[in-house]
Amino acid sequence: MSRHRRAIVVALVLMAVPLLYAVLTFAARPASKQPWLEPPAPNTTCILPTDRMRYDHMRYLKTLRDQVMREGRREQVMGEHAQGIGSCRNCHTHREQFCDRCHERSSVRLDCFGCHRY
Amino acid sequence: MHRRKFLQASAVLSVGAAGAYALPLLTAFKSRAATAKAASAKLRWGMVIDLGRCPADCTACVEACKTENNVNTRGDALRDIYRIRKVTLESTLAAAPMQKSVPLLCNHCDEPPCALACPIQATYKRADGIVIVDPHRCMGCRYCMIACPYNARHFNFRGNPDQLSSAYPKRQHGVAESCDLCAHLLDQGKRPACVEACEKVQAKALVIGNLNDPNSEISTLLRNHPVKRLREELGCEPKVFYIGL
Image (cartoon, rainbow over all chains, first blue to last red):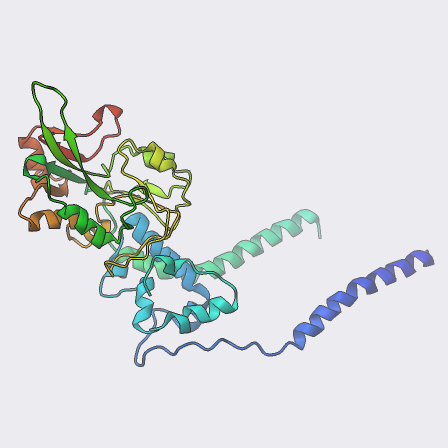
């Protein structure tokens, strides 16, 4: 019995070591820096709050894309409240200082601009 | 805790969490969806081409289409793309020799074989009858090109370097392409580039309109003229009608 108990303790310690290591390195990680983005044009408001855009812009763009392509609802994209991918450029004028900053950092390859103009 | 109870509880929790995450997004999009106007099934776009009015040496429609849609043409006969093109038909009958210049484009079939062939619904028919390629989804298998009985589909063997019209996106290499009746213009209440160009050169051979509206110009033309469609016997119900074919 005691032999078993010792084996269990050893196994637990062995398992705990990498876990502990992960927890400690995570706690001691350097504060992550947000990549610098070109500030938008002054006196403009985005279609959604910044943190929502940061998390949801791809879902938002894809939903708009499907509305336009599949259902022919173009008003939001072509109309006065233009919100398609091209209209980001109204405020964030340079793609290299806006889209590319984060996507290059996180190694996300963008397919948008093979066809769409920014 | 019993295993069953644990599984039930975790299922409830995960559904709840997913809902809580998705809800703000869904409500945001719903409010937009309610106000926007979609391609309606009341519309059924079709085209009439009056060959008597189409001059043999005129390529205004082809050029206008190229510019409007950023069509990939570089003078390479094998790989050039034509959403609309002109061919010359000749009769070999000695008794009735004739030569006709015929514009060919996607026929926007009611039963589109390309959409049937597409394995991922990248090609589909919109509610208003326009057959359209979604280049975001197209993976370039080219089944639609094989399925199309009109040779109206082309493949972007190379990416397109030309940005001729700023309003319309280009294509990357590896997607199929065909005429979409300038859906981006029709949705804004304008007419396709080829129709506009044809009118500009005083030919007025191309007429676009709503086939469901009995008072539209196109319906009147169809009532008053004998029309033919290409390869009607295949049963894919094309919506491009030719007068004087």
